[in-house]
Figure 1 (cartoon, each protein chain N blue to C red):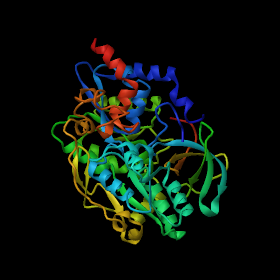
Figure 2: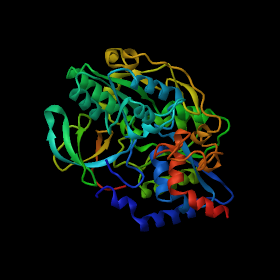
Figure 3: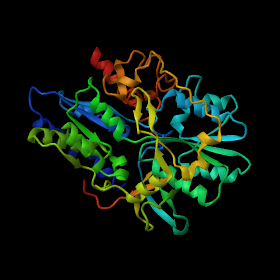
Figure 4: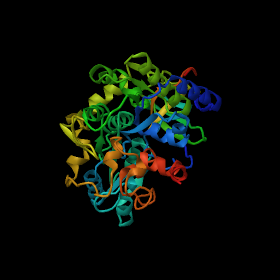
Length: 371
Length: 72
């Protein structure tokens, strides 16, 4: 397919890998963080880390929307799903995220009407098909999915669909990046910037990274050639002593973002004073809730939501994985007690989670290396 | 949505290139087809105007941008 095949070209990939090798300085260890879970998935799927020199290390960031949801919010979701007459809709991955008392999938087995959807629009369609039921959409994600939720809520209001509401868990990318950069236990040389988030918000919001923290950023696409080229662009910035936001993903990302998307988000959402992130704790102004104009569609106001904070399981080190402090396989329960079939932590659930990506694509390679 | 080996149950936060088959401009919806041939309704309010044959980048059922040109 056009826009896909040319960015998976193996020969071009090898040429880029050779240029990367020629660009790295000896005696320096480069730590580059890919912010987005989509990048993590591609890196493991295509074995991109195997093409890089040993002194270029990719560190996985907090940009998987499923992985950052704390257990307390899953418990809240399950409580709403058990309300009489509710059809609870969510993306597939979210159904398998464990709360303190099981997953949404297990709630479904116990009789709650939980349904998987691919988009909020699907959830709205279910609401129109079942006017006698309350349909709740479990909204998660960064600025990539937030416009979709916002448009659906605007549509629900315009069409007068009164039995539809949204349990909003949308988050924004800049506050956790700032929290990571302020964290003392992490030394990074540069960032592979989030491609699709930047499609919405533009590359400008990332300018604080070079300006305030002196680290280069390259906004990157998700195909293997995109990621290799972005690594090369970062290494060239470091070699030249430059420090700026570059856009490798120009075919998709306009520097200013999508103004219509920002407009509908500003209409439908407002910032929460603070929001809890799994492993990262509370981060101020990092989460979105429905604005006053859309309060009637807010599931948190329509239903009793327990809102109890739950500590992460002790054995699980998702927090350290999300901060890039440890690699997935360094977690004590990785691949033993915690697997994609029976995950303990969120990073093992989503296909964009670092642990699941490594388990699916790289586990056996790691075992060979250890022998 | 694309269903590859490990990506069938998606969190929805997956950018999928889709081709426009039919446009309902009045409702800001388009019928689109993905690489694997699966059809779905897509919100096009953020990328208006859209023509049949355009390729859109779709996230959670909403087109975020139109893919143009092929240069990396």
